[in-house]
Image (spheres, rainbow, N blue to C red):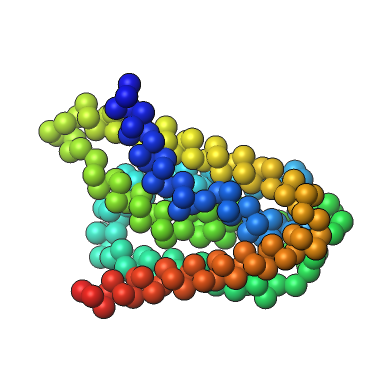
Length: 217
């Protein structure tokens, strides 16, 4: 039981600070401006669901997929960093404010709600950093032919940790509307602009780390 708890906490603790669902709430709010409460709830559930499949796929099959296509981890960081930077820049440059329009059936620009997979799940929630960590954790799993019981134990604890993490993501995004209500229109707009700039910086840092890894090899 103690070993199971340690394995669970290892995977959860390794992924939680990188995914940072609490810190991502401002980005989720910014990307869902103009959505109704029901649409936000559906998007939160969709992000949690897509995040589960991305993390499970990265954990158990990520290394094999990258090897099949000949893609290196630095390349994943560069591509993911560019995607994060582009998303942060778009949020930073987007206009609009938080007002009653978010309770209408459509967004202020006349389009429907954003897609739950891109950019809300990838790269906002499950980005290149969390994918890299998941692939690294998966590479440490016991071999099936030599230690089948240990592998089954690893799979069970890993799935439990990822499920718990996705539940955390859902709860944070599910109640993101309360953040808007507490901060008010002006406070939320300031928070969104600052968060967008931070995301832009994070994306550039991820790109830089990927480029640095390539140069050092």
